[in-house]
Length: 176
Image (cartoon, rainbow, N blue to C red; front, side, top):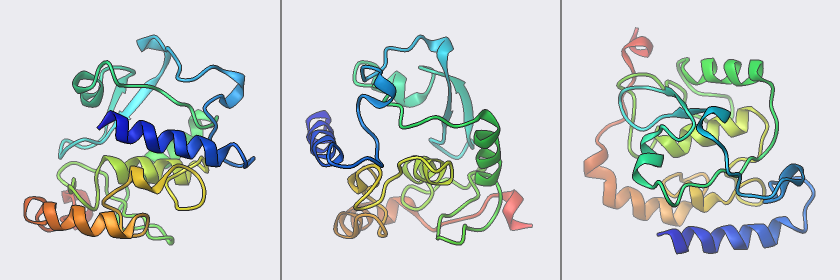
């Protein structure tokens, strides 16, 4: 629920206020959340087996579903060339040395192991922005199904979703 997320966000802000290396709600001296026009940004969405969608801001499925709860909290600056490089890496095969699954391609979506949370986490991590990791970056609770980030909650989520999720499969590109 929104109050659940808001509560954790407030806890994170309190924790983060004592550190110099993590996301702050006033990053860059700009009042947060940002009120951005749709033309201001491009959004990458990994929501289903259709693969990564490149959309104008406010065009994603998440925004259309949660229009009045969607907020943008920038976590840092990166060069467009770096975003493109990491975007291409996300669509390569295998996994990274530190355990992030790749293959964010058509027909490779998995509710528990390769989903919108893992995609966002991978992109943030590889762009060297705050990412979901216990003790630094963004709260691990934002990736509830990831055993490396939130062991107890992941066990619960996986038990509930296991049958629905099915086996992890690779895209046609990565099955070659």
